[in-house]
Length: 444
Image (tube, rainbow, N blue to C red; front, side, top):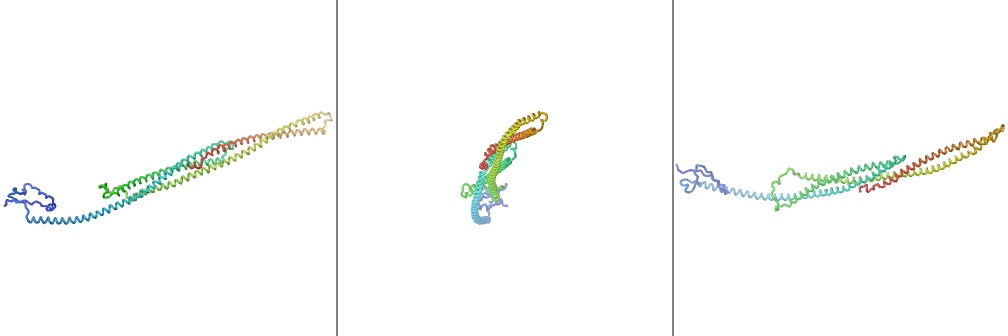
C-alpha cells in the first residue's frame, strides 16, 4: 500500500475566478493534513489538477465569459433603450406637469379674480348699507318730534272747557297720527335690524371669500414657484414621501364646488343687499310721505276747526251785542212801564176822590147820573190799565232776566270758544310748525 496520503480536491469556483472575486478557502478539517508546498510537502503527493481538468476549467471559463459578454451586450442595449425611453418619458411628463401647472395657475388666477371682484362688491355693499343704517336711525329719532307734538296736542286739547271738549275730527286725526307714528317706528326698528343682520351676513361672506382668496393666493405662489423649477434649479431636493396620496386631500370637483358655493353665497348676499337697499329707500320714502300726508290732514282739520271756532265766536259775539242792545231796550221799557204805572196814580186818586165826594151827596141827590157812571168807568179803566201795565212790567222783567241769562251764557260760551281757539291756534298749530321736514324724516 502506497504511503502517499490522498486528500480531497478543494471546491473550485470558476465564475468567482473569472469575475475577479477572491476564492473562498476550503474549511479546515481537524485531523486532516492540509496541502502545502516546498519542503513541507516532501514525501507527499501535492493536490494538483489533471490536464483534462485544466482544459475543462479553462474552456468553462471561456464559455462563461462569452455568455457573460453576450448578456452584458444585451443588458447594454436594453439599458440604452430604457434610458432613452425613460428620458423621453421623463421630459414629456415634466413638460406635461409644467403645462398643467400653468393651466392650474390660470385657473387659480381666474378664481382669484372672481373672488376679488366679489370681495370688493361685498365691501362696497357693506359700505353702502352703513349710511342707510344711519339714515334709518336718524329717521327713527326724527319721529320722536312728531310723536311729542301729537301727544302734546292731545294733552292740550284735553284741557278744553265745557261743551268744546268734544271728540271731533281733529282728535280723530291726531289719534291716527299717533298710531301711524308708532307703526312707523316699529317698521323702522325692524328695517334697521334687517340692515344690521345683512351687514353681518355680508361681512361673514366677505371673510369666507377672503380666506378662500388667501388660500388660493398661497397656492398660486406655490404653484408658480413649482412652475419655475427646472432640472438646473439649485433649490430642488429629494422628498421621498411627497408622492404619497394624502387621506384628507380633496379632488378637483370638490375644490371647484367649494369655491362655487362660496361665490353663490356671496352673490346671494349681494342680491339680498340690493333688495334691502331698495326696501330701505322705499320704506324711508313711504314713511316720510305717510307722515307728511297725515300731518297735512291734522293741520287741515285744525284749520277747519279754528275756522269753525272763529265763526262760532263771531256769531256769539254778534248775538251778545244784540242781546246787550235788547237788554238796554228792555231796561228802558221797564222804566217806561214803571213810569206809566206811576203816572196812573194821580188820575186814579182824582177819580176816586170825586167818587168819594159825590158819595156824600144828601138824599135824592145821591143818584147814579152820568158823571157818576163816567167816574166809575174811569176808575175801572185806570185799574185795568194799571193791572195790564203791571203784568207787562212783570213780563218785561222776566224777559230782562232771561236776556241776562242769555248774556251770561253767551259770554261763557265766548270765553270757552276763546280758550279753545287759543289752544287750537296759538298752542297746537304753533307747536305743529316744529314738525320735521321731509329731508329730516328721510334720515338725512
